[in-house]
Amino acid sequence: MRALPWEGLTGRSLSYVEIEDVPPFRRLKSMGQTSTATASVALIGLDAPSDDAEARHARVEAMRAAACPALFGTDLPTDVVPIAYFSEFRCPFCRALEKDLDKLLADDPAVYRLVQHELPIFGPASELAARASVAAARQGRQQDLRHRFMRTPLVAEESSVLRVASDLGLDVEQLAKDMASPEVQAELDQTRALADLFGFMGTPGLVIGRTVLNGAIPISVLRQITKDEKTLPLPVC
Image (cartoon, rainbow, N blue to C red; front, side, top):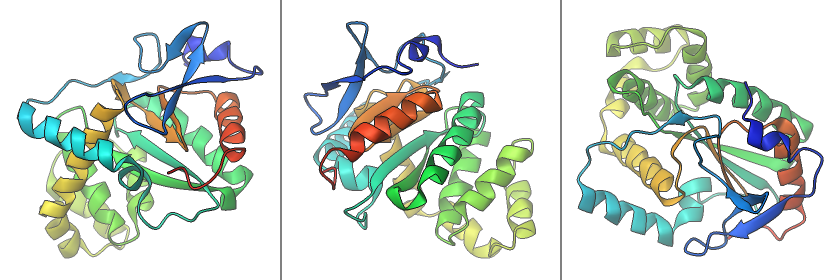
């Protein structure tokens, strides 16, 4: 089910408000209020992990100074609209949004670059699946593994994760090693810091070019936002 607040934006010109402490990023402004992560938006809530507050704050401040490469990577072409997508495997709104993202990217694949960010919020099973997804990216098979996880009950043990990976033809030994690596942990920590920085209260979350969004956004609004982003100078920052 779609989030009702977005329906009023369909077919209208969109207004934006700058995020003052994270330039050049912005949010949608609607009905006199900033439309972002609110209780009325269709999303799955994010329970703050019991992380060390000081270390978490330090990671957020590090992201504030380097949000673009953290969101979109360092090898981003200068002629595409980048899309950073924050998701959780057990989030039903994420599944709905991903179908619309697939349609959006199919409109003109050369115009967009999608960058996946795993934001596990439902405990150990979600964390395990997120680690596997990030590790699979190192073999160029992240989306293959993600799509398989999306079609099956969420795996709760590493042995079942590796079995799925083996069925897909991944290097299982390397996957297991990467899942336990400091590099994968650092990427998950970075994603959590980005979510904190942009105020994501749950999943799904999106950053389309300069525009930060939280919740299941209808494809009509996604298309309007990307159209607006195409009129602005690239790269984003």
